[in-house]
Amino acid sequence: MFDVSYMIQNTPKILEALPRTLLIAVISMSIGLVLGLLLALIRLNRVKLLEQLATLYISFFRGTPVLVQMYLIFYSLPYVFMYLNEKWQTTFFPEHFSPLLTAIIIFSLNITAYVSEAWYAGLDSVEYGQVEAGQSVGMTWLQTIRHIILPQALVNALPNFGNAFIGLIKGTSLAFSIQVVDLMAVAKIQAGDDYRYLEMYAAVSLIYWGVCFLLERLFINLEKRFSKFKTKTIYV
Amino acid sequence: MNTSYYLGALETIIPKLPITIGMMMLALLGGLIVGTILAIIRIRQKPISNVLATIYISFMRCTPTIVQLFLVFYGLPLFFELMGIDINGWSKFIFAVLALGLHSTAVIAEIMRAAYLSVPAGQFEAAEAVGMTKLQMLRHIVLPQATHIAMPNLGNEAISLLKETSLAFSIGVVDIMGSAQILVNNNYGMNVVEVYVVISILYWLLSIVVGRIVEWSRRRSQNRYRRMANAT
Image 1 (cartoon, rainbow over the protein chains, first blue to last red):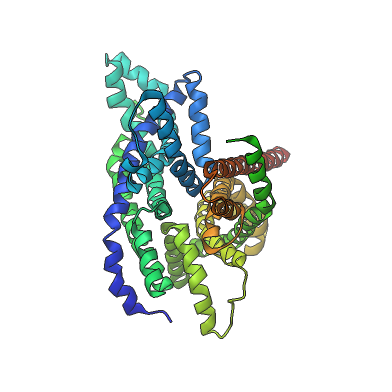
Image 2: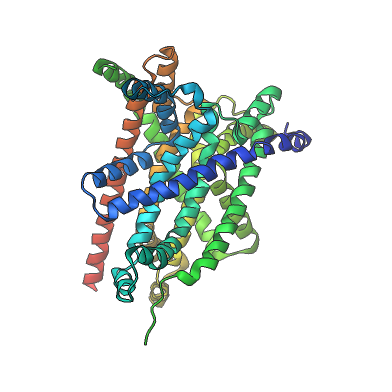
């Protein structure tokens, strides 16, 4: 039957892996924010060829399960290395890429697609009049982006970034399938050792719930703090 | 890498397509029915049921689907055992549908709640003014409009549900992902990339098709609404 004391006893073991899960999520999200912005800018500026490639990339990563992407990339990385080594005499070896690093690469590529959509919608919602207003007071192009466009786009995209990040945290639970020892992997190993599956999965679900709950609070607070940047109509 | 291998892989995987689609459709259907009920519970805000619904929705939205799948797979037999029912003979397909359905219920409840709240208040008043009962109002006035508003989000949920069915093989369901895994294991590590290329393209196409269907039905319901608006 369900053994509550076993669950409480072994929860600290699972919690030890929490930093690893968070590490994967935070690094992937940071990379995704940069690459996603790049893709969004390519699509907004309608750069020929690159725009089509960006759309294809986003469609693929949003249209296929994370697990499939993980296996696909995990198993094709050695071939990519082989190709690179032959072509440019580089010395990449699969051994240099720990499962953790591979997971970060995969989740970065995946989250880039979702973040890019959020960036796109956020940037698209800033009216062109805002850019003109910036230029008319003598701002340079960079200043316009830095002081006018980005703050407004960011505040519009923030809720979607939050959802993407929480989705990413949940997605990292699949990293165990490429041998990363994250929350889920520790729970699985422990569960398998003692045949206490339900207890361990209940424990790990509570941990994910807690993390996600805290993150939701955090994002609500961030939204409140940045709401001053929200586009307001001022009547004069 | 050769073409014949791709075709061979496709030949093994394609017959499992109905299982993937079936899982998705059943979970979506269950989610729509129970999710709408949950949404109404949350809107009515009756003290206890509202709190329970909120906790349920929060849990289901905040934990990974694979964990939920395992919880249902290992937890449900225990739960039924307490009531003296043996469900160990149930097929794994049923467990997968239940887990995915429970998950989509929570997501759809939130979607429907937001949609319900965005139906203009005048619509409720109009229904009351012509003497409709609460149930009639829900059935003829509110739900059709709420469903129309919710359509894009429901479409997203359908696609994410489709992607989540790929996790069902972890409890032993042989869907397209499951048959791909078996194929990989039988090949002793040969042609692994080819199998995953095939399976990813298959999922990609399925997502695109689901997206198209949703977009088509959204347009249809939009046209219907325009006609209704013009008639008045």
